[in-house]
Image (cartoon, rainbow, N blue to C red; front, side):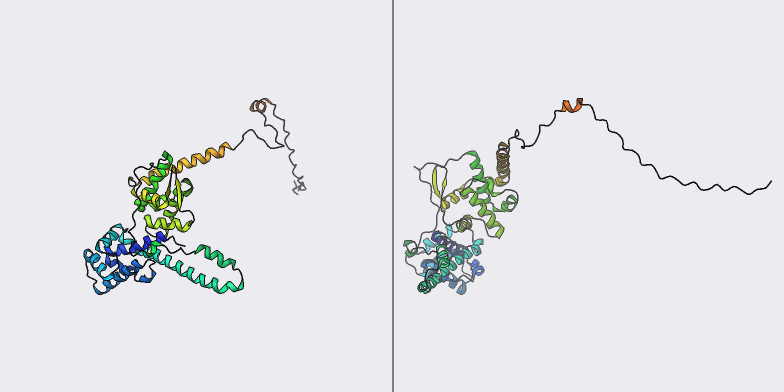
Length: 340
């Protein structure tokens, strides 16, 4: 099942992108308001679609006031919509965010139909296949997150001032710098992914994030914090909290830290070569350390030393007898019949 936090953030990304650039709604005409999980987002998308249809020339600056009036949701005013628009990722990626919303909606539909099938099949005894599918599509328990009328726009949590700073060694710092550069400048992903393999990264969140970046880029989707986090959760939905050295960070906080890390453009290419070279050296050292050059096979005799080979008399080799050609028959001599 899609994580409810990610589903809510994808919905807010669609709403925020449409508020900033209303014409982007034309790219996601298939996404209807009922596909939104949160009632506030359903009302906002319906108001946006109606405004785009009736007043297509409305400037983006007036959209927050207009949508707040049309939606008429308790706690949703123009200020709230402006904060929602400011927190949204790039509007040009609205089609990708809409696909995430659609995916979450399809999973909810499958879970609902699965519950009906399990209820119908309950009289026929246990159904292992349905139980396994139910574990994959387990519906979240309804809570305050989806019942509040206006969820706060997503903002990455800041590190408290009294908390310990995350300290890593130089090797892991290089890996974080590569990931930060690829996340902030995804135009380098295709170049780097052709030679930098995922096993060169530390097992755990760093390797998971790099694999997700490569997969998302190869699929043609935009590489940003939301799409990468969605892909990481899709690959392994059970591990959502990760350990990063001395602190325990949730994956969204780790990705937010990468997105905010100051990094030189193109650092992924230079540092990626260092990471790969370091990994190759470590593997070669490990392979050679396991080789015992003194061991021989059970029936192998020691090879003679070069001195013995040089000083030993060379064996006399008799040439093979040549084959004699067959005897040539002499033709009878013909004497000339000449008379004196």
